Amino acid sequence: MNGDIALAAHGLRRSFHQGRVRALDGVDFQLPAQASVAITGASGSGKTTLLYALSGLLELDAGTVSVEGHSPKTPAHWADLRRDRIGLVFQDDWLLPALSVAQNIEIAMHNTHRTAAERQARTRELLQLVNAEAFAERRPNELSGGERQRVAVARGLANAPAILLADEPTGELDQANSTHIADLLFDLQRSQGLSLVIVTHEHTLARRCALQFVMQDGRGAFDPDKAAP
Image (tube, rainbow, N blue to C red; front, side):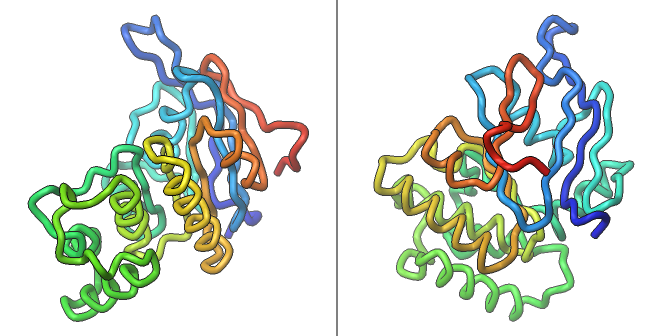
């Protein structure tokens, strides 16, 4: 690891609508290895745009992102990193409706070195980790919102990433399920040494992170009331 920084971004710029909307306006960001960072801010401040930039899912107008000291140059390189080093948990879980819970997790391991037997074993391990064994064969439309998010977290961890990026993982959940998912994420972050980024508008969840990065009008800065990297 280069300087124990899992993710670093410099001068990120991204505009929409022929430049009228500056979603990212020169953002600098660092995620220390094995740390947790909450990205907060009002709706439209650029939180999710930043997360997508950090995962290589967004083409930038300017700026650079490095992952563990390396700067991806091509979409193929980014795809490899999302397969091997970066896990993603989306606000809309994006589970495939035609597949079972177990299949939704296992599909994330296709195009890896794992054999079919190894993929199945890893899927069982993840189902146990997120307490989802009981509905492994159900389809996503048979699950509650909290159950779907548990599956989404398991899928994000399928390839044992070093970095987990989560976009509003509790945003659509009731209080009980929100607390459960938050507990799960932080337990995993500690037990597996994950570098964790959570986009959230929930103050309670943000306070549980070691660092807080506040977005406003496409710009961002670390909260001085929390330790900065």
